[in-house]
Length: 155
Image 1 (cartoon, one colour):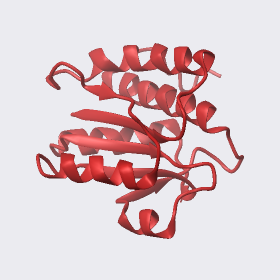
Image 2: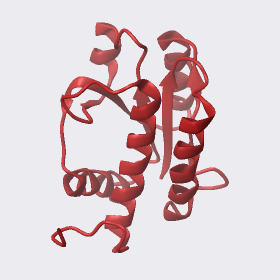
Image 3: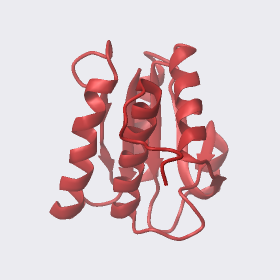
């Protein structure tokens, strides 16, 4: 399985980029058999450019497109891990998580997405949402691998 953690907007500030890269580097080894770059974090200047890239990928595989959106489904880390594991186990080759533009996703993009995911009811800066998403994907993959990073029930 391969993952994209895409975003609309300008290049994130170095501090946020370093934090996201920390988790992106940790994610890669947890996605075996995915080729050279099992996780990518492309940035796009507009929704249209993102959709063009998705259409390009669609010609090779059938990616699942998940928009991060305030109207999306909220999940616990364990539920998210189960969902991600199910997609992996069912042979999903590419999941594209996308963080939208500053003014939010267009209605057209919401309709085109396979799923809407919310990180919670609070509004987050896009750069911070990217870091949180990367960490949650890493956490989900460690849960699936039985790694002690996620210590559920030890609180």
